[in-house]
Image 1 (tube, rainbow, N blue to C red):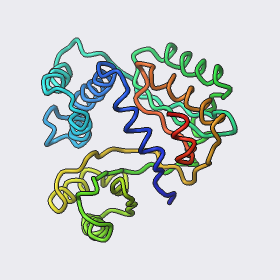
Image 2 (tube, helix red, strand yellow):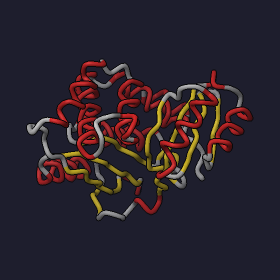
Image 3 (tube, rainbow, N blue to C red):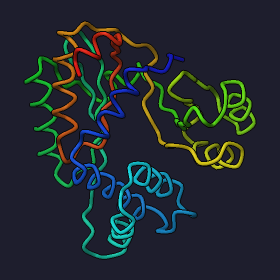
Length: 247
């Protein structure tokens, strides 16, 4: 499997810090409402909801926002959202997967297509780029969880498939259907994780120069600013020097 991208982790943290908190909380609340509506409103009985609540808590989403989102799923006024995935290419053939949750498919499709076009990319058919990614569960831990060997042993004991560690932390990967179980087992061994979620993991990454990175990040930023877009995943990477200039 492809190695963990340090740049992706830096950008992820930067995005968390720089994003408008109200927009971020709104997207998290939407996922919580949908997860609760699709299953049981009790996180202990609903793995998807449990992961959604954990993701919200990881970015200090207020408790009342989380509780309100769950209660909303029980009322008749909860919006009906459709989950949809868009796939396309940025400049230089960089693969991009966009996951959205929308109450208006025409609006979302039109917006996503326009972002790709404005940034020199093109939207493809479903399946056009996802074959270059693996759908897996990812559980992240801080460096304080232990050294690489300790985390590796814990991951194997919990039933995970792979672990990547560096000076920024540990990333544990497992099969999609095993995420909730592996996450629970790991917490009994290593304590609470930083985050547990389903991701599209690139099978390989393409390093880009500053000019290309600027154009690609413009597209990523436009997509992430859209209220209907939940996640944006790509397969490009960059050196620390390029990342520093981009910041």
